[in-house]
Length: 212
Ligand SMILES: [Zn+2]
Image 1 (cartoon, rainbow, N blue to C red):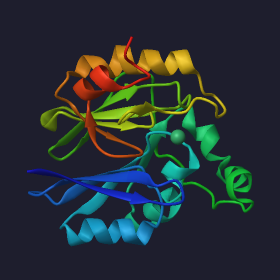
Image 2 (image 1 turned 30 degrees about the horizontal axis):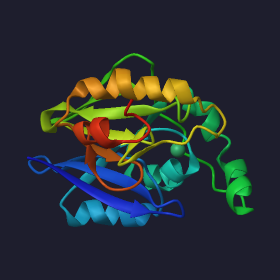
Image 3 (image 1 turned 135 degrees about the vertical axis):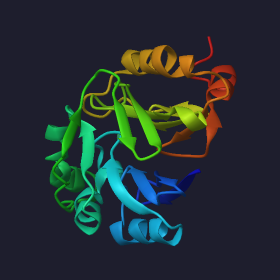
């Protein structure tokens, strides 16, 4: 059985998700937000071993714990290819947002492309959906078996990702959401990088940024 654990952490109240397989005890972690020892412990207490680390995009609040988590778990780290250069700016992002440099990010072990790809760990199969607009390296991950979308900072309950940061593009974000996420279907659960869970159907009907 697939189990999903969510945790909200860090100075930007960012959601981190652990997708675990209760039969094999393998788990994928989406967005190493902060506090790597806590993330490892949370997984362990649920009976899971983090074997793969994914990032939806390279903003600091989604990757701050990437290096220590990779070190603690030995798990590989995947991000979109555009994210590689942005990851290197993590210390400067710290100065910009907090006045102090953040630690270096992990070196990616695989660079995801703009094309749909399959990421497999045991019985867990995720499909990548390249969704630029909030950030140029943004990937959403779709867990088709459970009809769950890990939307990162594209679509939120009642809102959408900001587009005023470097590489942001508002029309492109709207296109990513309406052309790539909406077709997943109204009953798709949306677990985003911030705020509470929603569904595609609810956002189509009520999200002020998306209703015509
Ligand atoms: Zn972001």
